[in-house]
Structure formats: structure tokens, C-alpha cells
Length: 463
Image 1 (cartoon, rainbow, N blue to C red):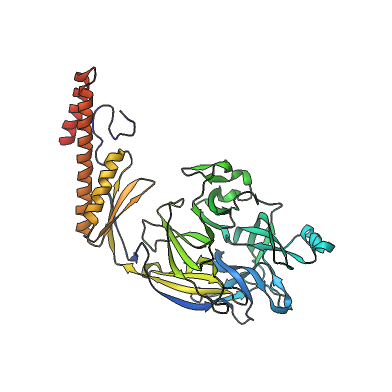
Image 2: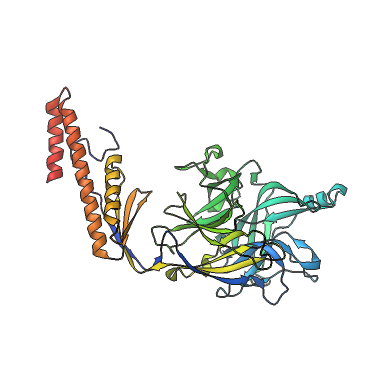
């Protein structure tokens, strides 16, 4: 008898597994339906000149919200390759402040070049080059006011605009407790964390869940996933990589979790209900200006993705838009609203918009565990769920880890009836399997032994 079969060798049938039930308060529908999009204009520096910049990925540190930017055009003062802005009022997400500028208006970069890099740029053949540090992945907070940021290092030739990717570095970021409220400083770790021939972990997206930091990184068209204990972000040997079923220390075994995405952010939110707690907002590699949203029952996926909005520009309405990011701190989950940003090109900047999703009222749900059942029984349950839910105002999802079937609907009694009918179909499918097995055993060399075992199973199943 297969070990995957839900019966004990003693011949007793495993009882139907306990049913999980509950109710979600109002949440947005999935698949997503966008009712409208309110364009809020540029994220601008309050009481300062408008500086064109891109990225606009937000992070929280020490109770404050920051935007992390890429190349920032400080008018006549030059280009700062990465800057940050603090948001004084979370209710006004388009108003932000640069906290560190010099007398000429140049914004001090969060990540700056070191002495060796400065010497490299001073060489006669490098006069037209500059070094940029771009922080697409955001800041990971490991304790109040202290965090890590993974950055992509580039060498840019200003003559032809060519980019040379050097790799991914790591810097410790901290709030200045003694100076201007909310001001940040950074200390770069020596060398690089990941090379150009490896997935650029941490520079695509990052998040903390409990004591673990999760990091996504690109290599070619693929996006990979890694994790590391929160206390060991600076130690490369402590990183582990998702291989499709578990995290392993061998990078060579890593498999992609997404494909063909240029930028984006993974985050946790119950805007679409507790059954889809992991979300993704981003853009593809195809320069199509589409805002894409994804949802998953577990952080590792699989991801169900949908293009939901064609982003538009303001100062540059012609070229494609990029750097699509969500901002959960400005989200009213119960009303189905989500703040997102994207970038248009120079002389533009970071554009904010509020997306309004169609919502439903309080929803009842029941989950039927499927772990341990044979494929035949599972397929029977799924077919029955499809048959019952179709046209009856119910929906179903097959979820993983643990494997289960989720039934959802507005009417509590309807959900309960559907769940009971599906559980009954499972019991019938099991009984049919056992009868077939009994017939097979009856033909074996020891029919009496097999008959005694499976007769006992059938009697137990039938009560």
C-alpha cells in the first residue's frame, strides 16, 4: 500500500481532517477589478525646487517613511546617484523633504563612493565616468532606526550613456539620533555581496518576516529568492536559496519564482483577504508601462499576476514608464485602496496614484485539508468544488502549504453546505478506492488476510 494513501496499515480509515472556518471583513476582489485610478501628481520636495529623479521606492525606518531615489538632477549642482526623502505626514504621500543638501543645492547621496572609487574616477581615462549606487530593493529594518540596504553598483560613461554593472553591495543604514530628525547615514560593507554572474539578491526587493530577511534578485530575465537570518545579513555564507520546494545553501540549485520583470516590490497585505497575504507590484521588462499586481498564498509563490493599469507620464508623456512600486503604509485595506508610484523620464520624476479596487463585504470561508489524500480523491474534491460553486455565488481556490481547498462566499450557510458536500464526495471517493483495492487483494495469494483487513476498513468507513 502506498505511503501516500490516507489509511493506516492497521486497516482503520483516517477520519476526515478537521475543517477550518472563518469570516473576512470587507476586502478587494481577486482577480482584481480596478474601479478607478486617481493620479496624484509628482512626489515633490516640499518648500524646495523640483529635482527630476527616479525609483521612488519607499521604506520605513525608526517609525518614519522614506523614499529612496535614483539619479537626482540637482539642476546646476550636478547629479546625485542616489538620494532619500522623508515623508513628514503619511496622509500626504506626495510631500517629501530632502534632509541633506549643501549650499549649492546638491543633495548628499545616501550611498557615496569610497576613496578607492574616487581615485579611479580621477584617472585621466575616466574623466567622463561616474559611479552610481541604486537602491531598488529598499531598506530592511533590523532594529528601531537601524537597517540594511542592498545596492547595485554601476560605472556610467557620460559620453555615450553606457552602463557597466559591477555587482551588489551592502550598506548599514541608521538614523541620526543627535542631528536633524530623521536624517540617515550609511556605512558600506567591504567588497560586494553578489557578483554580476549571480542573481542580484537584495537589489530587486526585500522584506522582513519575523527573524528572517527575504531577498529577491535578478539574473537575466529571471527573478530568484533567497533568505538570511535578520542578524546575519552581512554574512554571505548564511544565505539560503529557494530551490522550488525548500531553502538550500547551494546557490546553483536556486530556481526562478518570477520571470520577465524589471522592477517591483513584494510585500504582505490582506487587502485581498487573509487567503492571499503576499502581494507583488511591479513592471515587466517589455517597456509597456503596465502596472502589474500579483498575489500568492505563500511568499514563495506560485504567483497569479495581472496587468491592471497603463501608467501615464506628465512631463514626459512619450517614453515608457518604469519603477512601479506599492506603498502599503498609505493603504486603506478595508476600502480596497492602494497607493502606487511609477516614473517618467527626465525632466519628470516619481508619479503617485491611488488605485481603487472593487471590494466585497464580509465573506465567509471554509477550508478542506487535502494533504495525504491520493490524487484521485483530490481531483474528485476539486471537480465537486467547481460543480457546486459555479452559478451559486461561491468561489474556490486550491491552496498549498498546507494543501487545502478554500470555499468562499457571502452567505455563511451556502459555504457550509458546499463544504459538507465536498467532504462527502471525498468520503465516497475514498470508499470507492478501498473497494477497488479490496478486489485487488482478493486475487492475491493470501485472500483471507487481505479480505479481513479491507472488510474492517469498509465497515469503519460505513459506520
